[in-house]
Length: 64
Length: 313
Image (cartoon, rainbow over all chains, first blue to last red; front, side, top):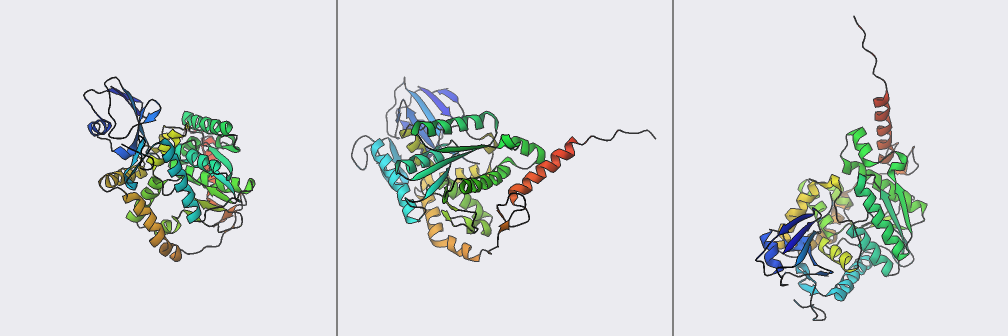
């Protein structure tokens, strides 16, 4: 599947991932720090993922 | 995962609240949570005219959306900081948001006065965030006065407040702890009350709300925020929250309920007078905004002064 990390705009190809929680663990991202977006919907950690999915991981952390 | 309220498929899980929500139920939950903070802390009421400080980011636009949806009288105020493309895109998103909803928006551009943040940094060598904070405080106060508002509402969220609290405690900044409250009462007739209606809602919640409401906010970060200490504190708190959900909300809520009054009581009350430069309240001859402005003028003048030619012998 294709994974886009925002706001960095970094794109990754990752395979062999069954669920959102597994994807976040693989990328070492804490669940409360990103929105997981597929199309116009948000996904929870238990949501299944398919090999042809386009996923956006959008950071919610802001400020300086 | 099912929605805790209606059992439909959930789109968001909030571990701190031991709940999951579908879209309609989350929007209801979020709006009710903000409304309860406003009522509980007596921030404002239906008769208030509220100046909402809007940056174009998720928090301030989510706040404006909630307040406008709840029928409060709002005026948006955007301070255009002049930080290149980041500021242009922030202003554009804010204007588009206001236009689409028919909301009143006032914009002040620092560049129009020759005070764009990069120019200030270049002239004074001050950190950008320090100059930015000084300008925001001045222009928010001045805008509230100019537009007849009783209260200024900012989009500071739970994570902002928890990170600031951690920093203040680590360095025992007792004067800062005295002023870290969701409601700051005015200490001069030209000031108005300042409130933070999102102080108990997390960044995850405000980002989720903005997404679900179709708010087109600026996702990119201010280029000056990179490496900021507050981001380090946020990362530490995120780790704690992951291990023990609810840590952040407990930290901030209990500080406000049980400890902030102690620091506020010890705060030395200083009498404000009128700034000789702008007439706004000040604790010295010049307020911090006019002092900074004078420093910029002085340094730019010195830089423009021709260097005397070198002479032989």
